[in-house]
Structure formats: structure tokens, C-alpha cells
Image (cartoon, rainbow, N blue to C red; front, top):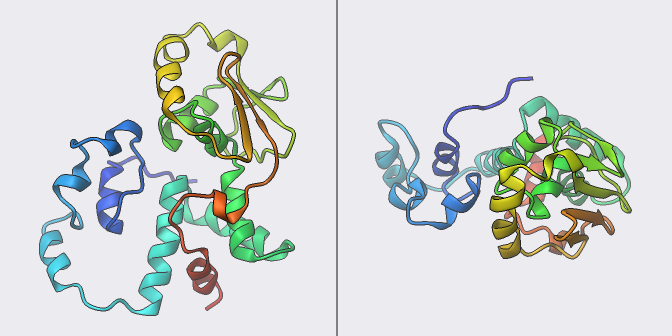
Length: 213
């Protein structure tokens, strides 16, 4: 599966809003979106000036692209999540967001154990986390209520987990559907997240409309 490896700040500029893909940098004046809040490319500044009323299709496409980029997924993988959500009970859009939120890399990020989802994906891939005591290196692993996610014992002496992580994690608020134990570098999934507890600014109904055309 192809994965975007270019500069992620261009993605925020393309979407016209911050997607918070670079962790701490997104909250500083060094954020490229703060300095150049227009689409990337030679004609980006003029494109912003010429932009008129968006069509329904354009709004649906942008909503889908934003969700893909926030969670770091490719088109095929994102469509797979949508198909699963469509077959499940409940509102398709809400189920889709629950599936995305309960990916292991996203849960690691939500617990404050990584500064961005991209960093969380890398940490999981390198085998620094366990789920219920078993080393798990699959970022797309779906966690369930009751699962315990923890930093692997062999990784706890690394400089990142001893020096960088405690300062970052202490500043991050954990959503109510998760429980965190900073002393033991672990967290627990209490339940599935409700829509109001997912703070990503995504209009899931537009995504449903996009795939229902």
C-alpha cells in the first residue's frame, strides 16, 4: 500500500485548515500554515483569491480527504473502513469514526504517548508497545474495550520514553473513553468513543454522501 512520505504541512495548506499532523510544531508560530494559509504550488495564492462557492461534490471530497490525512490512511484502506462501517449496526458515519479512533496508532496518540499520529505509527511499527501484554507492531490493530496498551518493558529506558514523553504526555488531556497511568506508561480502553468525544473537525455525513453517490 502506498503511503504519503512528503511534507505534511502541505496537506494542511491544501485543505485550508490545520490538521495537526506535526505535533508540537502545529501549536507554534513556526507552523507553515500560519505563515502561508493558502494552497501550495505556484498558483496557490491566486487560487485562494479566485475560490468561489464550492459544489456539493467538492465539499464531500474535501471532507473525505481531510479524514484520510488526519488518520494517515490511503484511499484503499479508508474505503475498507467505510465498507465495514456501512455493514455494521448504527450510523455509518459515527461507526466509521469509531473504527478510525480505535486504531492502535491513534489510541497511542490519544493517550499522549506520541506527539502526532505519524510518530505513533512509527513507534508502533518499531514494536515499542504491547496490547494486553503482547508486543504488537501493527498500527491498524483494532483495540477493544478492556484492552491495555503499554510501553514495552524493553523500550522504557530509551531517551524518548524517559525524557521526551513525560513532558509531552503531562500536557495532553486524555479523552473520557480512555484511562491513562503515566507512572506505568500504560492506558486502558474503557469503551468505544461517542461522537461528542471525538474532537477531529470532520463532517462524517459528507463522507457518507461521497461514497453513496
